[in-house]
Length: 105
Image (cartoon, rainbow, N blue to C red):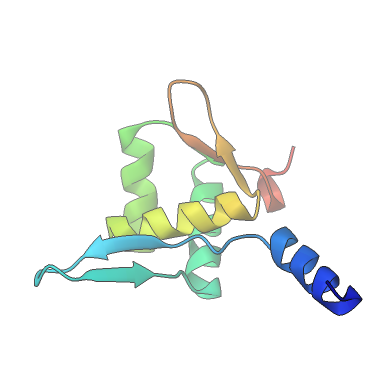
């Protein structure tokens, strides 16, 4: 293997995978959802506004209403922020916590 090929292989291996969510449309096809930077930022603001953690249904609904995103889009956002290491599990019982920006500990 040439030096360039080795470097390329290492770079590809180290690149974070793009997190995407899939949603099944009404006609049975699968739609891949990739959140935009604006959607990510809107979610960050909404979760920060509720205290950085979503651990119950009430808080989840507040964030959902603040963003106006559907469940598939919210799933894609959470997956992407996990790839970025911006979200961690809140506890063993469930929930998520934003750990960047104003929520950094």
